[in-house]
Length: 160
Image (cartoon, rainbow, N blue to C red; front, side):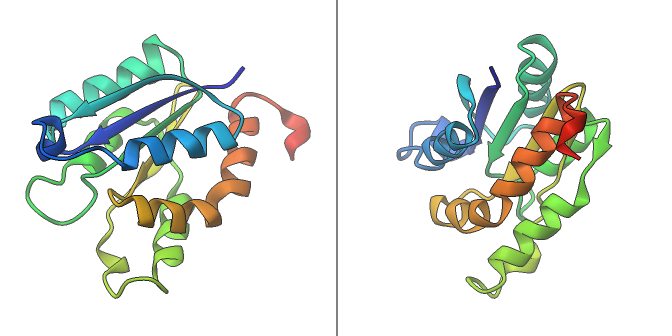
């Protein structure tokens, strides 16, 4: 069974200011991909903490899918991409490119997303935007490719 972890990265939400709507949306996406939710974190925009939680879910808990939401913009506190790049072994730039492309028709700021995706051990790690609406917009474009990537990472060579 595919296991997934969801990380919501938001200093304000971690401090109790508002409800996390993006984490549940990512959990629903993971379930649509056939995953069981192993855990969810709500953490502040702190690079060391993000790296630690990514490593925990990918390497200790061995989740096949680790999805993050938040911290992918250009403000000084947006450090999710740097934390993710420090953890993954192989980047998959096409996933991030597809997310930006899917956002293009919905926002003039689509090009400001710095989201990344890649593989850490046997886990697919993907940075999603922080907005629940944006998650839905990009998820529609990614579902088939994510399912295919998960099969390949798990060693299903028939997926070719």
